[in-house]
Length: 112
Length: 115
Image 1: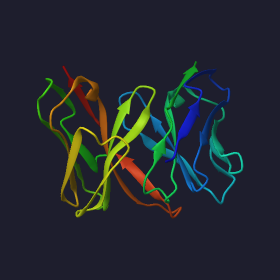
Image 2: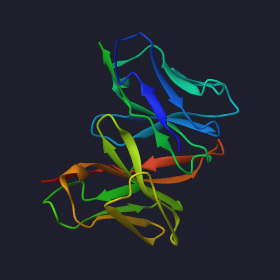
Image 3: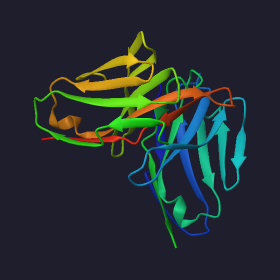
Image 4: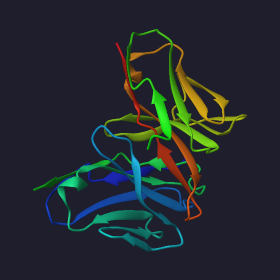
């Protein structure tokens, strides 16, 4: 089955700096890669996703890049703000999102 | 997102007890899921259901069972709870997004402690 690894497990940045979280996946048939944000005590919520036929997608301060050859994808957050502090999860699916395999999560801390 | 609700939100129980976690949704989605969250392990799929008559095991189904009582309701049972089932449990539903892929929407979670 699919295996998704996520790094780093914790990331601390200064407000205004950029943050990058990386994930690798094992199943070359994976075709959908969502990212979820989970604030403390809250439910995971989708923040951005990308399909395998797209190399990059951007939404304001967040962007996701996908390298199908290397089987890795990354989340980029620019101009970080304290409210970006949360746990971020990547996931991969080989069936259009019907089932997701999650990475272990990255705790991002943005210091004011 | 109040469209997916879970009860109870917190539960403390003892080893060997049977416990049921309930999930309801008003989104009208056909697909529902149960996940378990442990620190450092992300979200792991326990069971999923693509419609009322379709129930499937996920990655970690041992020790759990489910029931899909209606399109809107999906319950998770621990027949005989054990301490390593202490975790945060999330229910989720899914529907097609504009991307053409299915997006999953999570409930608020149930924190279960087994003593």
